[in-house]
Image (tube, rainbow, N blue to C red; front, side, top):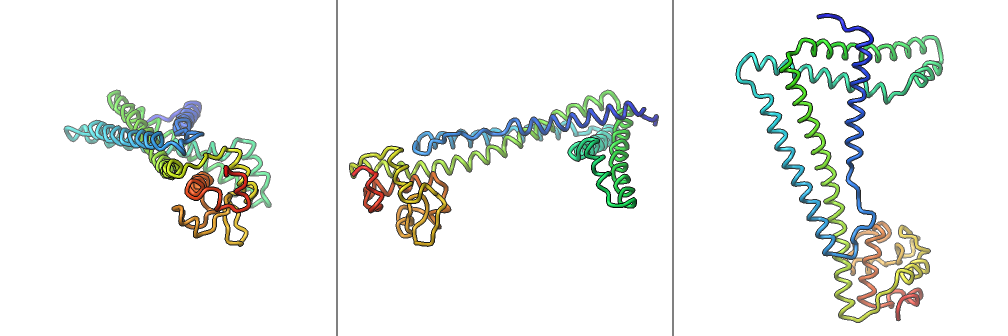
Length: 294
């Protein structure tokens, strides 16, 4: 096999690196954006959000299955010659992936200045020699792997290269859909939690209708929290009362809570405090309850 010129090797390294960076960027830029204002108090909207997220998950699953079938079809050989060609192409793809991995690791390790700093921080001549050897081996490994990949491409047929391109497209599509599926899974967990909180508020609304309590304003709730705990949701002073609304454990369990109230997220504490108010009015807060509608 002919040798690949140094300039061509450098171009290959940069190309592989850019390809890897673009893949990483595409994965992160498509991250699921969580709503900044979940429908904590709207059960219908929360259930709709959960349904939509479950649909996103199912769609990603379906697309992954389709792309995996497409990949299987691409790799199906009709005879021994095709099988050998596909085997060679898979080996070439593995070589390319390793070259990308080495290049991205080198990139993440820093630029020439950080490499120089790495050498200058050596404590002794022996340490300096050792560090230089590490840097040399890293560069050598990237060049060697990139050269191997370039040589394999030179020996691949035009049809084989087209097949590799198709394989790349399918593999990238699978990667994107798996990322979408992962985000959808996270979204489902989040949406289920929002539904749980919205159900507490829905129960509070029923009590409100039954008992006729006036809904406190956001400012009244804030004044209550400040009076009870200076609005510290995670407060636990050892006096038997916990969280922003200073629940005791019996009351907390009575409104459906579990564990230590101060460890519950703020939205759960808010929801259970609202439920408690529409159940018993301001009385559970004998002193600070003066800030709530009487």
